[in-house]
Image (cartoon, rainbow, N blue to C red):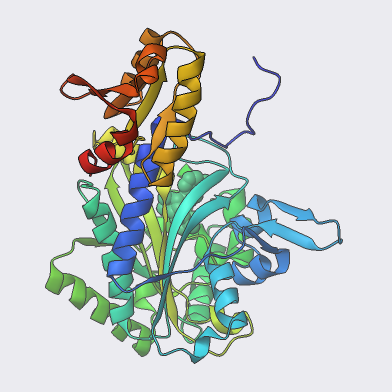
Length: 420
Ligand code: AMP
């Protein structure tokens, strides 16, 4: 065991896994851009208060999972446990609310949560995040859901489906929470300790409890969709109509409440055939109160976040292959000290005209050629001391194995013509 090992719940993304990452990042960015979303990058750490307020006290993320620290200026900081609070902070701080609506934004990057690691669950992981800001209508919910769906479809994921629920709004949610709390009053002695605590601190969360003894209580619990105000009910049925028109399969799931405080109206997840059981690959919903909560003007918004590690896990489980990363097409091999000098000069000349080139650093010519093969070079220039005296080098086409002697002075032009 080496003395230094990576922290629990983190991963090294080794070169052999980078093609997956490059592909996934490129596809999500391209897809988001083609749907009209613009990229925004926000800091990896923000004030702890932003997340406490935006994500909400009483949520698992804020209560248990944040990587919080004091910086050297004695400020309370937290490594971002999600994107939305930071993106909304940036939206307000940069005066983006004066832009024509909707503002559509996407981000990708690392997220940090102190969770118990398991397959597909890490302490540092990556999310793709998208938001549509400034539209109250269900068309915006639909558009975020379609982006989420189409991203997974682009990766050839099988058996996609939506899980869908509404969590109401400030007009109807409090009354429903009272009904739920009253109902749970009768089961105080039956449900788990967490639920006894949650029913007071964060009542909706009792609905996604996984404890065995709570299941019958949850199954018979009052459903929020029976308690929505007219506006929320209308919004929910409009969204379902769109999904029906498009033939997108969804399951109404009254237990889907999602971990964060800020959701209003729609909440959804995309499920895909994963490793064994069906698993959530992304989740999101509407958060009409969040911008205002962060001291911006009242602004409706909706969005989702997708875990990229899970995308890659599912891609591997489904045997989906990805394009290899491009390698430098030219490799310079040489035989002796004089040729090394020439090779170094040629290296600079080739790079100066934009031709990706690697130079051998050690070993016999044989092992240099093996390296060139392994690095998938398209052409190898072999420089020998005798040849170079005559002003010549050898050019080998690795695909065909053809080898020819060419004038050293012409090799840059020759390669430029032969490479795409
Ligand atoms: P959430 O922000 O919790 O709604 O999560 C959105 C998505 O991020 C999930 O559907 C997962 O794909 C992914 N995700 C959440 N937590 C983790 C984690 N600890 N490790 C890896 N992926 C995660």
